[in-house]
Every structure is written in structure tokens, then in C-alpha cells.
Length: 608
Image (cartoon, rainbow, N blue to C red; front, side):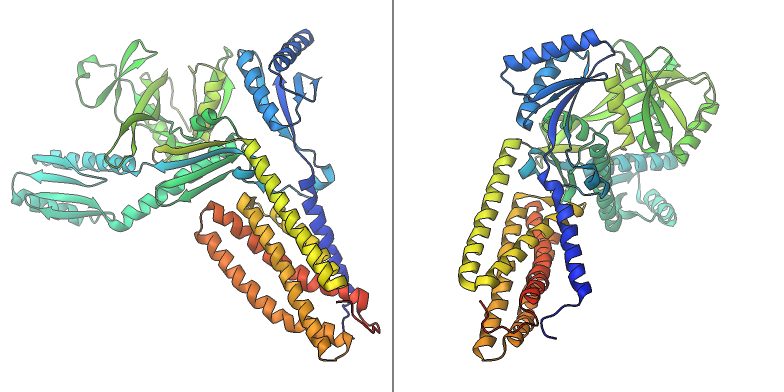
């Protein structure tokens, strides 16, 4: 029979609509901004602190909704994020580190929706506000480090052979080794060539050798450096509990980081921009060797002079995990856990050096005021001894660092080590702090655009197509529900302002599909065929046109997402999802509604 679905097809359509409604529901629930203040178990102190905080907020004319005391916490609830952030700054400044102040958003989504893993759509930086960074990776650091290591190895070979030479350092990894004559040069060239090094080129230049990295390895190393840095930065973002963040590559050496909802720019810079890692060096106790080039001079605690062996025993790359605890004197300490390679090195080293002192050096790279010829900010290497320990017995793959100033410093060091060491130093070349008020305005404008667009569609469709126009509008709302539910379900999807533009566009495309169908039905009716056949032919003949148009749009959206910037990607993802859902709603769902109303019935006139 024409214009009839099987019963199971109607059940599937209803099931899809129910699922769409369920997974779009979390978006109607608003997160509640609160400030939580952790205080010791002293009721009198809690009341006193609460009164002091209330006075501070009232004095600064900051509105709050309510407050309460639960267990060891004071909870202050706010109506909006702006007041929450202002209050946090004031409370934090006046806390004098006597209590812990935590800023957070409490979800109001019902438990049954949470049980079904239903979450609201992730909002991008332009809608939620937050922090944007553009970082640049300093690859020269790695190439120079590899060069020095390679030069050291070559020096050892040449010194053992009693061959005089000079070293001339060039850009990146490259350097020249200059010999006394061509005979020595050829002898060393043949020796190095026979070693069959897979990633180094040896080229004869006058009475010396140019030593460079093969292009293939050069490109692969650059790729691995930025990929490792992205991985480390993602871990750091996760460690400090920032959700809906974006960490992705841009160009060859640049990385974009977006932290929606975060407003503390200095805290984000300190955590993400840090290149901190640890190095472990042997302390030199023989003062007769202090002039040797194998030792570096340090001041421990800004007053005790020490000479450390330049050779690194193990470094941050050998650390697989770290956490904080307190020692027997209730002082903070960081517990370090090494990988198998680091554990073996430390075990063999400590066995040979029982009774010697081992220094833990915190190494960081700080931006200077100077720039190189390319305009890049130069970085200064900052080294600080944070711990000196005597090796009393053979060490294994875990040990403890003490001597830290406070628990905050211990937490910071633990997070940085736990998230891994950056392959190369990074520098912030662009930073923006986008306030939530900007995001609110964007959301209002986006919703306003959607409402105006839908209203115009409703007026046009009802006036021009009567009942079939109403059916198209019902499908349009279902399409909007499906689009929102898809965005909520996709873990990598983030809604941006350009994404809202994509939604508005797909709503227009969905209406356009129904216009094609309705015009086809009218055309068939004008050919004087039966109403049931006109409906059937209208949907069938319009399908090919709708399918072709939407497939080309899907292909275009895929390329935009693959090759476009983050703004274009936001537009592409919502357009792609909207096209898929619009094809389903404009063809399947409208047909189902038409079948229910008109299918299998004798109709004299079709209201279209």
C-alpha cells in the first residue's frame, strides 16, 4: 500500500526521537557557580571566617545567592560566574594561606541523565570565555643538545687516537670538525663511514668534515618533538582539572591551547608554559678538581657553594609517576617512580657511590627580554638545587625528594613531573583572556539568530504549504534536537560561534529539502494523478536532488574540518552533523507524519 510504513519503522523513528530528546536535555540545566572554602574542624573559626567573608563581599558590592557550612567547608553560591570570579579574587587575597579556597561549577543535571552518560554540549572559548594561548616549540634546543652529545662522543674517539682537531658549531645539529691535514681527515672519514650511522651524514669539506643530520631524520625528529610536547601539555591540562580544553598543532612548530571557563591567566601560564624537569648530578667533594670543565658551580640555598659533576645520571625523561606526601616531620615531599631504564641506571650508580652526595637539580627555561635574528624570544636556562641527599644504600626505581618550601611547591613539582617533560622548551607568543560576558553575548546573539531564522521559516512554510508546512516545521525542531544531542554525545565536538552559524545554515538546508519535496508533490498533482501517488512520487523524485546536494555539502564540510582553522572547524562539524540529521528528518520523519495523516486514505484535496 502506498504511503505506509511498517509498524517497526514507526517504533524506530519514535525511539530515535526519544533518544535525541534525552541526550539534548542536559543543555537546559545550568551549572551553579560556587566557592568552597576548606577550614579545619573548628566551628567557632568557621563562623568567624564566614562573617569576615560576608563583610568583604558586601563591602565590594558582590552579589551572592546563599551560603552554608557543611562538614569542614563553607559553601557560597552565586548567580553568575562574573560575581563568582570577583569574589574568588577577594577571598583568596584575604585568606593569607590560612585556608584553601576552591572555585568550581556544580552540575544540576539529574542523576538519571548522568547515569545514561548524558552531558551538555561543550562550549568553546568564544561562548564560555577562558584563556587562549599560542605556543612555539624551540626545536633548536634539541638539535643543539644532540649536537653537543655527538661532539662529546666524537671527541672521545679522537682523543683516544691522539688526533688534534677543532670544532666549529653551525646552525641546528650541524657542525664542522677541522683536522691538521687531509690524510687524517680521510682516515677519520672512512672510520665514521664504516660505523654505518643511520641518521648522520658525513661530508668532506676542505681539510675537515661537515657532520649533519639526514633530512628524513631531521623532519621526523621535528615531528616527534611537537607531538610529544602536545601530549605533555594535554596531560598538564588534565592534571589541573580543566575540562573541554583544546590542545592541537598549528603549522610546523606552533601549538594552540584553549582553556574554556578558566580566568586565571598567570596560573595557566605558570603551569602550562613551564619546561621544568629534574636532573640528578653527583656532588664533587674533591676541591682539587674545581677548575675542571667537567664540573658546574652552584649556590645551594643561596649561600652554600657546591660543584656538581656535569654528567647527568638520570633526568625527567626517566620519571613515569610522582605523588606528594609528608615525611616524619610533617614536611612536604615528592615521591618519584622511575621507568625500567632509569631504575637500572640509578641502581648501578648508587651501588658504586654509597657515601657520596647526590644533588637534585630543578631545571627550567625562562623567557628573556632578548630576541634572536628570527624574532623569537630567547630563553635563559635556570637551574636550582632543591635537594642534597647522601647515598646510604643501593637505590631502586623509586625514591623521595625532600627540602621543598611548602605543599604548594610540592604539588606543582609533582604535577609537572607526572605529566612528563617537554621535549623542547616552549614560549608563549600570543595570549588572550576572554571574559565570560563576551561568551554570554555571543550565545545570546546565536540563539537570537536561530529564533529569527526559525520564525521566518515557520511563517513562510505555513503560509505557502499549509499542513505540509507545519509538518516541515515539526521536522525542523526534531532536527535541532538531533543536532544538539549529537554534539552532546561526540567527545571531541565543541560548539563555537561559527558552529552556531553552521546550525542556522543546516536549518535552512532542512527547510530547503522539504520545499523540494512539496514542490514535487504539487507538480505531480498538476499532472492529474491520484493524491496517494503524487505524495509517493514527490518523495521519490525529490530524493535524488536532495541526496546529491547534501553529499556535496558533506564532502565540503569534511575538507573544511581537515584543513581549516579552529573557527572553520567549528562551522564544519555542526554543518556535517546538521546535514546528516536534516536528511533523516526532512525525508524520513516528514514522510512518517504524512503517512500517518494521509496514508491509505481517500482524500479529495491535499492542503499543500
